[in-house]
Image 1 (cartoon, rainbow, N blue to C red):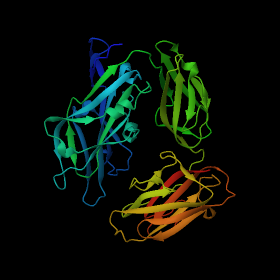
Image 2 (cartoon, one colour):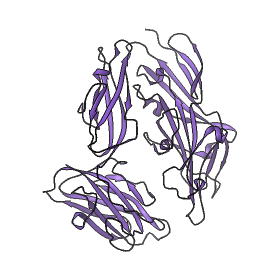
Image 3 (cartoon, rainbow, N blue to C red):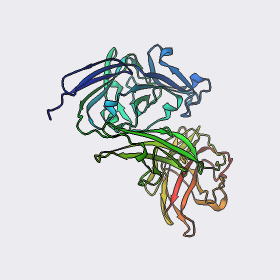
Image 4 (tube, one colour):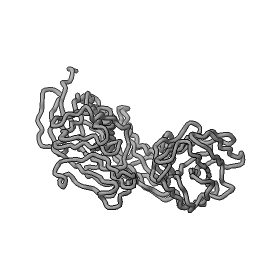
Length: 444
């Protein structure tokens, strides 16, 4: 077989040109599929940046100029976070396992930038995710792939700034995703980058049409779907192959790190356990070529937990770790529901190590904080005194232990962590100067 020739793909959305090049190469040029700015905070009228975007501004309203910036008032009480999303429709040749991706570059036309405090800009983060060809508010919460760190100080105004996104394109192999999105956001208040148009995605690839892999696509549930514990859900996918045609009846479904545990076929009825899960669909053709795709779903408990929200004016929870597992995300504006937004934390009967770390806005790092941790063993959505598994008080990171009785049955439970400045508080409906975080824990 002759060595395939390289091909260049210029993507900005819908196809505008297609012509053949020698051998297995091709060059396509496409126009924008979807773009928008998302606003969380002041410009939507409530001045509370809580991570939930309040307003969507399509590209046609911004006239092709994206304002990627964070804004705060001097007293930190008025907050705004403005980010931008671009989505690109990918042709079948790029999502096929039989295509070799050499490089992929996101080209950003920079038309302005400003560093609010020192003149130097902080990092910009680019989050790749599976797109849907139509920007929704929910897109601004997606972080399916590792963030790409960008140094805006290297950007030149009135020039195009390239960002290497090769790993993001390669991560979408197997035909599961027909489009890719890129979410841009600043990491520090008062920094701003203005991005003009057109934003382009340039991909260099080689087509290798020898023995084609099958293509499998999950149609339902969609990425980020919110399901309910013990409620019936239908898993739907299609699988095709150039040589074997329709292979949907051979699709094998699995959850997380398990193998083929949910059933076989293009439509399978299941009920899923509580938590953040990776749902996988896999198919093998007659030549033994296997393709797999996945989607992330959230399954909420059948019984909701009682309310508890902190006031983070002075301090917040910086991180929580259990047996070396955990999360260091900083301020969550009073409450974080990690039951459906964070992988489960594994516990064992007996001793479990825990590290609790506070973060501060206005108090000194020497301020003493009270910590309480409950596990809802009876799954009634409330946190009673006999469900407290540790309580401690002190300054800075605190090391403590979760001691689980040997009589506790295995299973998944909600764990609530409350940090309060001023002593112990109830697990529900308390007045909290600090923050509340819930996690799913698995007792093995």
